[in-house]
Image 1 (tube, helix red, strand yellow):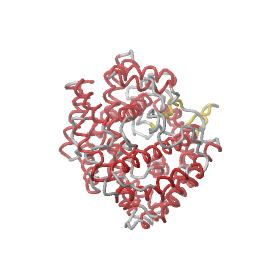
Image 2 (image 1 turned 30 degrees about the horizontal axis):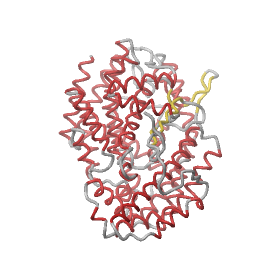
Image 3 (image 1 turned 90 degrees about the vertical axis):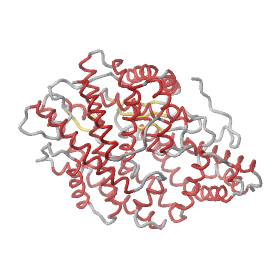
Image 4 (image 1 turned 135 degrees about the horizontal axis):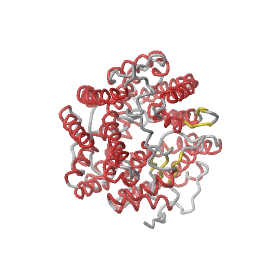
Amino acid sequence: MNIERKNRDFLPNDLTINTWEDLQPFFEDLDKRCIQSKNDLERFLKDVSELEAVLEEDVAWRYIKMTIDTRDQELSKRYTDFMSNIQPQISPYDDKFNRKINDSEFKNDFVGSDFKIYFRGIQNSIELFRESNIQLLSELANDSQEYGAITGDQSIELDGEKLTMQKASIKLKDPDRSLRKKVFELIAKRRLEDTDKLESLFDKLLSKRNQVAKNAGFDNYRDYKFKDLGRFDYSIQDCFDFHESVRSEIVPIVKELQQKKYALMNLDAIKPYDTDVDPLGRAPLKPFEGGEELLKKSVEIFAKIDPYFGDCLQTMDNMGHLDLDSKDGKAPGGYNYPLYEIGVPFIFMNSVGAQRDLVTMMHEGGHAVHSFLSRDLNLTGFKSLPSEVAELASMSMELLSMDYWDVFYSDKEDLKRAKIEQLETLLSILPWVATVDKFQHWLYTNPTNNKNARSEKWIEINKEFGTGLVDWSGYEDYRKHSWHRQLHIFEVPFYYIEYGISQLGAIAVWKNYKEDPSKAVQQYKEALALGYTKSIPEIYDTAGIQFDFSKKYISELADFVKSELKKLD
């Protein structure tokens, strides 16, 4: 693909954003406009959309560069400067523009589900906006980034070699149990060194988030955040139902799989450093060496699913929109960051050559394809996706790609191992999602909680969704703080149940693919191309699947996964 940035209609093409003063004239222009016709409103919407795209992309690059090197203080300063000094100036104008659109008599001239969804979001933003929250939200955006700085600096030294946490975790798959134990204890020790920092950080985040909710008239931050996330298509009770469905339908299957695996290991007790190792003592899967090979083979796989998908990844590479390898000072995790103006996203990863990195690349590549398919939608707001849709794209791609993993694995046994690991992980992630989500419900409906109460509740919920097969004796302190590893709790609160909902959808997409590959891929593409111009259930329906997380539906999908696992035995 040959993609070039389009000429702007409203903003100068050479606009450089250093201070609020660089932007202020354009916000004042929009604020002063009178909307006296449908054409006036249409022009206003397009100019606001262009401004949003430019600003989103500017802050995106600041974030991307900061996370690539958390030690560069200048990069961190550029991001925090935007969030501290520019974003607070923008927020009041955003509210003014929303009200101008919402109050326009010509709004009803824009018909169709796309504008219905868009205007619904605007109404929601108006209802949430409070002047008193502008500074607090700016502080929270900066405070949450402290998590990446703290954890990005974590590493261990093993036999004279310094290892990032991502690289060290690969050793937990090594057949040598004494090595695994040593590495696990080094990781645990290093992470526990930051316990006080992370607990203090969370106390600060908790206090400010609770205040934001109170300022907006909510009893607690949970209820505020549900509205802020625009969860129009399911309720808090639906989340509780999801928790219960996973506990009753999925946990027993996961326990059965673990019992089968652990029986092969013939150990007196399964310790936390035994859970990731191959039960037959085989070396960890090593599908590739380095980010360059990962990318090349990923492009090949994507092209086999659909030629367009391969073009998407290749275009990103050509444009320098990839940073895949783990390195010192890099923030943890991985993400696909949409860039709304150019329409070509950026993939950030911490690849170390492991099987999970292969899956992460498929996952983030699914997000990337989504960005490409929705890039030509008319308004930036149409591309701002609910997570339940965004994660459907990424998790489906993990499964759609499985038929082509022989690109990475020439050995049939290794290929089978990789597929079994993927399907078992697919099931085991659902109890983890329920654990994290239920913990967050408790955190924010019990706003006076402290470090000790959090530890106790975390262990209680872990036991509820766990299998009880792992012996944590000797590592109790590490276990009770293991929620510190979940960056979502710190950086993007309540963004997690979406993974569970989307995982169910992805299984259904994959099930369709097994029955009719070309039809399933076409439905998948059509659903992603909608962006957020239809409701979540409508988007799922376009993909040929149900938006459903009842016990019955979860049980049906779990049975399908179990049948696929049996084929690999």
